[in-house]
Length: 280
Image (cartoon, rainbow, N blue to C red; front, top):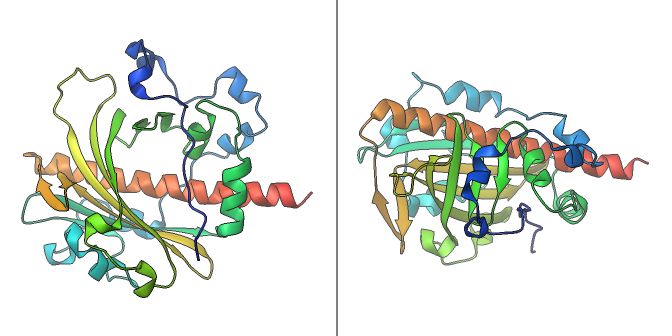
């Protein structure tokens, strides 16, 4: 069965098409007057959710897991693709290669093909930044097809998507449903992160993320895994660890908790929007 997926709506143009790049320094996460006038603005004013209590408990300094609890991208099938839960669905550690690993579980109760499909078809039909701002109020500025402007907890950032890669790049060549019949999708992302408006040539923080989305009896869940200081190229992981371990850990924790807030907020909005429209 093919499930309805989530594809965020972007501003409608590439970042390279911004003739005046200084425009990004003038952006705000607040709604513009024309956005405030939208019928969808009320969802922005619900505010952002937080990552789960378990994630907040485990993803903080002093709670570091043993490195044996982490794994590399080529172990995704073995360690993630199954109905039962890993011992550490929320947690972090510094791996032997210096890369910081973070795990996060986000639950989205009430999200299914019907509610997701209705949301994707009918939510914020206006072009521009409104969809992205509502997705996580107070942290999202603008989404381009190849770059997001957001605050993941350490200030405004350019999060450059340098590649989406399918499950085959993770060594998964068969149907994931064979391992887990509730699997919806497995997707990996390479990202390069620099401060908003950073000069050309600024050394980026390299992040690799894998999201494994599943249908559950209560809705959907996303098993997130992050590797701070790693990129996957042609199926091989390359390490770019930060020399400052404390800073790398801080980035990892904030990145994971931001993702938890994003997708918890998204799940709430999907369900809230569906019920708002169907309870009339």
